[in-house]
Length: 172
Image (cartoon, rainbow, N blue to C red; front, side):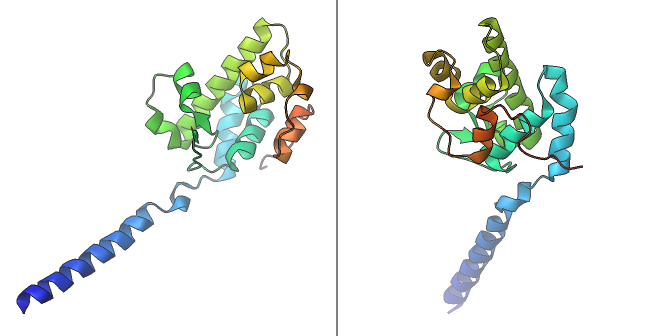
């Protein structure tokens, strides 16, 4: 008899732990106010030679500022692939869900892409957006002509590809 009681107590404990652990994995647990995101970008992007409005737009296009965003190949607010991550940092890819780290590494990657475009004498923000979205190699293959790439479904990327560097209004 006491064994059945003990089993019931154990199952109830496991069930409540499971519920509590689900709360620990709450997707909103890593919510970051857009003011904090904008402040960090606005302070650090110019130091890397990047337009803060452009970087903010990339973050919105990639994840809608979701620090927990994850696809089959990319992680975090700037949706960085592991290949892009290791290209510019020695930090472990597990850190891609830390929004500050993700922004820093994402901006380093944008800076790297910008340098690659500048070395070819073809830098423009539409080309930088296309390199970030489809890869530098894909843009180079199309002779750096953004119009030869497939049109993105995302409206923010469509505006970036068209030359608008500030398609998303930052918080005031």
